[in-house]
Length: 155
Image (cartoon, rainbow, N blue to C red; front, side, top):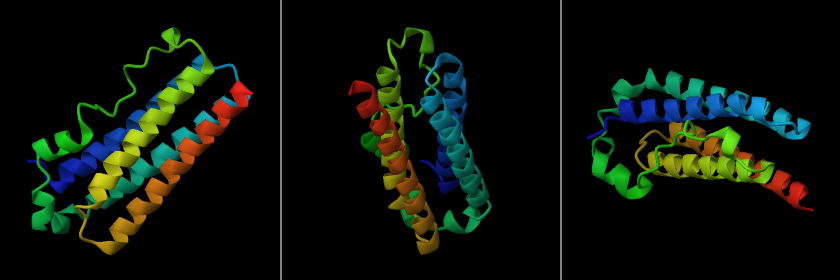
């Protein structure tokens, strides 16, 4: 069974993974526009990780909620499958073109949104839910920005 604190740790790690991989990808990309976007994305992910780390300070109160205690390993696996939410396994040297890399990043962002959609259903505090909804909106904007690059590349 996961505590809310452990789920917040997952969210923090998820955001840190994104930040690290977006920064690592910079060394493998020539396109100036994509480089600028990845720098911005890394900064966004860093801000999200900080917000979740700050939220963790309030976890003592939130862990008392019974619905949060019900978030167990089987439930998370049912919703998320075997997705590790890590881009560490991306071998940039094997990625054939920019569009393929962008598609990988889109899938990561979509997986992040899925995780937060599940997380929000276990949060009792409305102001915390609102902030997570805001982060979801930002993650959706990330997907759209990546999609715009694919459309530009394929035209």
